[in-house]
Image 1 (spheres, rainbow, N blue to C red):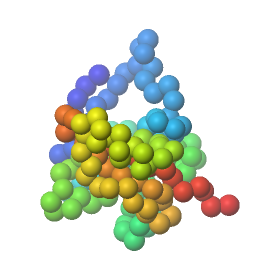
Image 2: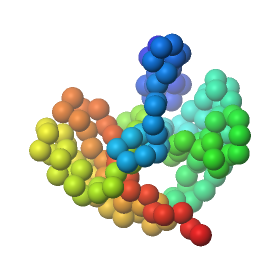
Image 3: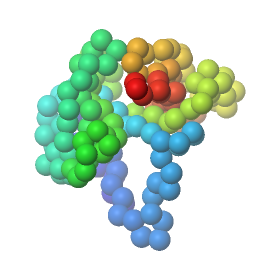
Image 4: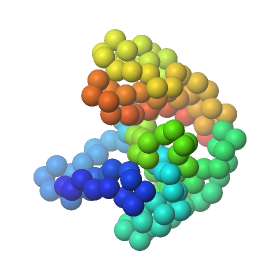
Length: 153
């Protein structure tokens, strides 16, 4: 394992699995489902990760803003998507935000506060995305939860 910082200033880690493989479950309730990079320089950040991991990107609009969907180098690009890249606000820190799937975002807001965390963004519905909220844990680490909208038929 190594902890690193990308050229845009976001900290990230890499993991070489051994006996412990890493994520045993993802995109199920209460598990990691998305990772979003907020970067002061999205073009530099994406170029770095593309050269490092071979990631691909696809531009979309989400919630009325430009959004870059990230996917791994292999497989169907939509099926291989795992996260996004957005330009950080001037007041925001360049950082990765992990999203965890939640059946009830509002209940998680209450549980975060009861357990010493802070609410950065209260639960809100984002059109074409789902219901989300942002937090910090008691040690200041940011994270988010999402109940995605069902996929369009």
